[in-house]
Image (tube, rainbow, N blue to C red):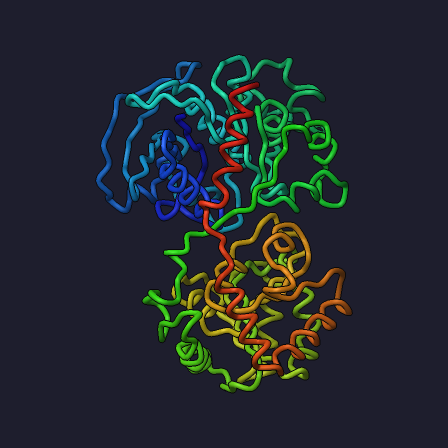
Length: 463
């Protein structure tokens, strides 16, 4: 079985978040399965070219519409990554826009072209895929272009909020027939919707946790696509994302102050002291340190944290926050750090080294997301013996149990109640040590997810 993963990101070549990590780790895990051969295809962005990596240029190609493009190949940890080169669309600063969070005006044309390029490559240098596995809206048109071709398609929805929705006037850039601009095709409330097209025409659809798969078929979480997802629910499967235990291992992580394991936790105390010193926080073994590595947005529950900050400090929590996001959230957290020096620190950035230091040095990992398709931060934190406190939504409810962390539903009252329950456990040192060990022994490896993906691929081939 040959599988080609089509995506807009791949770690470490180009990354803005969790998508790139999944597109790196899932093919690697699949390649370890006998009889499975997996490759990845992404755009050849100027940021990749700027890294001056050694790539092998293959024969130039054309889409079925006659558009010429280049194809290069690079190997990353044994996985072949094919790069689609088209300077008109990808030789510019920024992946989706000139600045983080912004969008290029021609993204409809850019990713329609990329999807056409992927769909047109029936074989790449001898690699002939049986299945093309598409990730998010940027490649969701691939199943539409291949709707009358034998190649099987799978679409994974990593976050339903991002749909690739564009005005009707831009539909022409897809080069699709006008007959597909209808309620049973890509039409969506007067616009056209890439993700809707992918959901409709893919042979199988997955999302990144069983909980999120259930949620997105409801009006509350369905982002106006719940009806489409209910209509196609027979081909919808939720599979929890994984992480690579070798990459997230406190016993060997060189970014943290001291290595440790579930059998010898002394290094975690050293990591906490080092983190507090670096962040200008008061150090105490007796009071819990909350850690957050997150986008500073409403979706991530930052407004809840800000509104209850005074009470958290009164409860003797301290907090270290790393992330970037919406201006109001950054300002409010900066004001809280100024109000409570030694108790709250904020770093407005994304820094992998500091993220790892927070996973290792914090006692509690806070993730109060309003919705969370999967979430990887809680899994990474648990690998480092940092107990999660999460809202019971999506992948958070699938990955955090009553034996490995604390969950809450609802708003402020429920959140504070869960925080009090956590403190009661914290005060019982033997019980807290048990929680830490349980967290560190939780297995979120991709190998556990592979049987579910193989079943999805089997179903896709049978359609």
